[in-house]
Every structure is written in C-alpha cells, then in structure tokens.
Image 1 (cartoon, rainbow, N blue to C red):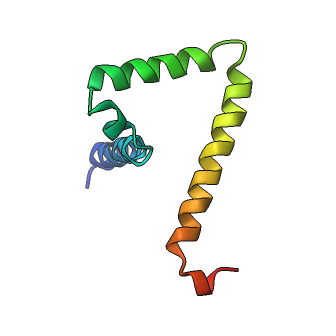
Image 2 (spheres, rainbow, N blue to C red; image 1 turned 135 degrees about the horizontal axis):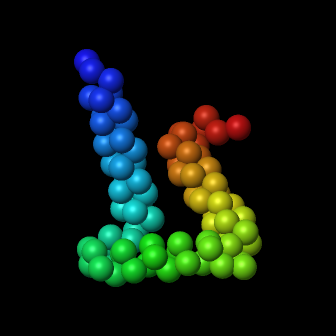
Length: 83
C-alpha cells in the first residue's frame, strides 16, 4: 500500500471517530440531524475556546468528557466484575 493511501485511511478513521462523538453525545438526535445547527454549535464552541474563558471551558468540557467515558466504561464491565 502506498504512503498516501495509508495517510488517507488514517484521516478517514479519524473523521469517522469524530462523527461518532457527535452521535454519541446525542447531538444528532437533539438537533433532528440539522447540519446547519450542528455546524453553528461547533462554531460557537470554537469561538468560546478562542475567548478569554477558553481555558476554563477546556477544563470543564474535558472533565465532563472524561467522566462520560469513564461511566461508559463502567457500564461495559459486568457489575460483578467491577473493582
């Protein structure tokens, strides 16, 4: 396989994973799959991250995401096998 093909597959995988996060967060259902609304929300997020409150937003959002991933991981492990 050529180097450009490998890079293209990596990029495709990355984009699919990002799209999966949009679905996992419930954004697709909450917006009725309105692409303009989803894009507008992402622009709003980017503006927030570029603002003077950007660092605080990063901390809050990263914490919330880590908690959600951890909760999801706990659900994936059978209750009797949890630490």
